Length: 202
Image: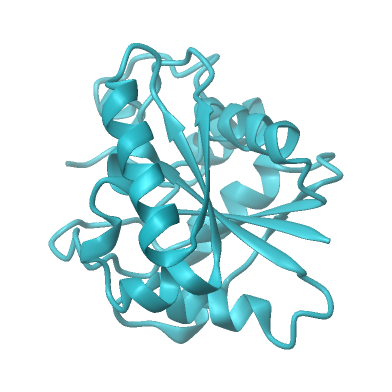
C-alpha cells in the first residue's frame, strides 16, 4: 500500500492541484492520495484563510468521482500550527492501512526541507515526491535530492509538474474583480464559491 499526502491551504482547490495529484499517482503508482488542508502553516502565520469547513467542502466536491482521491482533516482537527511530521505520523497510525507514506511537495520546498521542524526524523521516516515546475533549475533539485538520500537515507522522487499556470491567489483576485474563473477550478467548486460569497472581499 502506497499513500500520498498533499498538504496545502487549498483556498480554493483548483485544477492545477488536481493535475499534480494525478501525476503523482501515476509517477509513483500510489494506491491513494489524501488532500490535507492545513490549519495554520509555520511559514505563513499571517495568512488569512477561508474557514476550514469551506475548504473541506470544496475539496470533497473537487475529488468527487476520483477513486484514488481522499481528504483528511488531521490538521484541521488538531488546530494550531501544523507540523508535517506530526500530521504524517497521525495518518500513518500503526501503518496497517497506509503502508508507505509519500509527502507531495513543490521542489522549491525540497530545498528548504532540512529547516523544517524535526527534519531529520521526517526525512528518515517518510518518503517524498518533489514536483518541479517546467523550466526550473533541475540541477539544484537533483543535487538536493541526492544529498538528502545520502545524509538521511531519504527516499526522494523528483517529478515534473503538469504545464499548468494556476494559483489560488489568482483565483481569489479574479473573483474579487468579478472576472470568470471557468476552467481554473472544477465547475462544482466554482458554483460553491459564488453560492457562498467566498473571496468577494480583500
